[in-house]
Length: 318
Image (cartoon, rainbow, N blue to C red; front, side, top):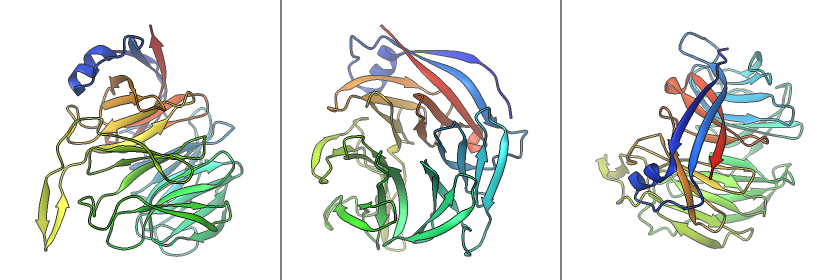
């Protein structure tokens, strides 16, 4: 573990100008104050983490794709335990890609499997929840219900809402079968109101949906053209990412991480209020593949190509 403390200041007005979005006069500067780092190029704690979640006691849980495990670290960043391993048996992964902790439960999912692994907070495997397709993203509502972006077949994903025990309560298709985003996948963040946000990986679009799945608003945050597509064995596959990740802070603001088509790939972060109004932006110090806020409103991002997790406090100055 490597812990250091740095302060990086970013002028939101300039960053918003780069993104083509007018700066809010009430935003001022956004400062990122780093207070924790886990892993690193000289460490063997994280090989390539693809998801992070923090429980109510401040413990960290990582999905590590390269060694096919879920890992637990203490509040100060010290390694505690890992579970899983490569395989198709109970609690094992072919490629762990996501993790979400809520209450006494830790959920993790595999890019290749149609189920969600359920562990307790000590990473003791409990059961698998069968899914109607491959799970691309998952988040948890305050009441314990699950929202999962699931691809049932060769098509765009739907969002399924589940009870905590895995029973399906609703299916919400995101697009029609004739939509050009047919091969798209999404980031997903559950809202405290019971709705959710989705961001399209290969389309410059972020949507807010209400608890019934109805569209509340839709934005093209980076004002990009449709991602270029390559013809691979008869399939037109997008070649550059647009929306790399989403995160929601304690104030209800939604943070959008730009992908390869952004001005600064993996570094541009745009901020919107719950009504969809642009209220700020900043640049991460280095590219990240994801964003995550914990209960204390601290931002977690990847660094060093995914072998490091860095945590920041965000300070908004008027």
